[in-house]
Every structure is written in C-alpha cells, then in structure tokens.
Length: 83
Image (cartoon, rainbow, N blue to C red; front, top):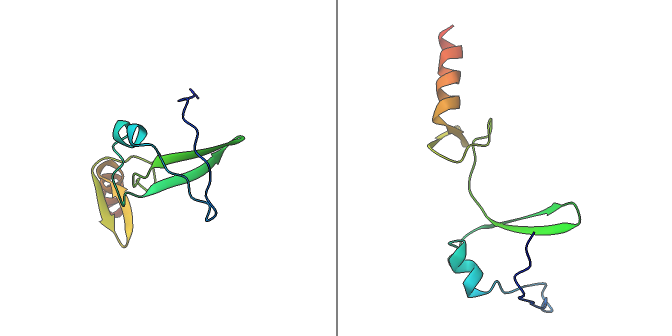
C-alpha cells in the first residue's frame, strides 16, 4: 500500500474526511456508498460496487429475487433448470 502523504484526524463522531484529490482519482462523489473492511492490520475504504452473489463479477448484473447475478451465472442457472 502506497502512502499518499495526507493525514486526517478522526472527529468526535468517528468521521474522517477523504481528500478531494483521492475522491476525484477514484470517482467517489457525494452520497456514493463506501465499503469498509479489514485486510490484515489495515482498514480499507473502497468505493462500493455491487457483485454477483455467485462469482463476484461486477459487470452485466441482473436482479433475481432481490439478489444480483451476472449474465454468465444467470445463463448457467437457466441451463440447470432446463435439464
């Protein structure tokens, strides 16, 4: 992980401001969802992208019964139903 040289303090409500340079670089706009997770001893902030529940792909998603599925997995499921 490369250091940006930017340091921010956590405020009394636990908030941290993400600098405009980083938001622009990663295409993060106001109200965009951000995923927060732990990777080893690091806290990672990532722009949230919905994924296929089966394979994790984030392209060409369709919703089925409230779950997101990619075209490829949707086709495989259709083939299973046909058998």
